[in-house]
Image: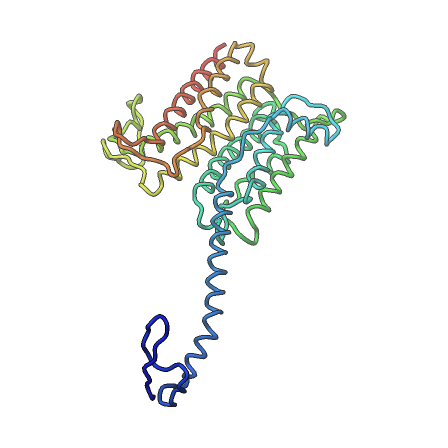
Length: 366
């Protein structure tokens, strides 16, 4: 290139812009660069789509992780009764509450998540644990319905709708297809609804709900066992030394295999939040059924002056549904600086369990 020194008003010095460049100063772009230029917009588009997908799934995951609110059992029972055109009868509130609990399990935000195979459901574990807790409560109640609530005595025939419903709710809770869990549970809901319709039918008497003291004790015994187990699992979040008391109180008792006289019991670190949310789901369902039980078994409770005892159980369990403001379940050690949410939950559940034991003893008195 021929260079000329030239000067402008700003005194810059360089090649003459009017001088044509020689061919040696230019070169052709290789074909690979042209391909890269064509691929680059496609890559940017795919990156944007992936980013958008992650943002949407994250938002859905946050929304689906919201626990269902408590509902009014009286309104639910009245709505179901008006739909069927029948008046409310003994057992109506407890049965309607049980049906609505099952429906909530399937119809809450995100639906039933335990058997999800795709994001964001497959990434979530807190709400599936909550579902297991609520489902356990539902299964225990339907079993008591089949064995106790609907039968006048041990030799009476079981209700066919309740027998079918129990089998449906005990179906595998993690089946995705052929058959799917939601479909099996929906069949159980339909069977419970058939029982409720027959229960409210004034022209028939083939379905009954027996609000007796022994039936209430059977249901409370099932709740006592579950709450005791949850309390122990929650307390084991920090680990504890535990003596073997399996055979205590009976000198002639025996067990299948020998167990250590002392062992360290501790919930694995990755399962602490799962146990916490399982307890939240169980107590959420239990609160609604306790409110329904207070209505349907009102005369039994009043005869034993035990209504206030039942209400105390409800009071003990209500704090288990308080909002968790921490982004995660904290697991501080003992009296350490960091809180331990599992121990707080275990405290509420233990007090409720003790109140249930007292209520059962009160109902058993002659």
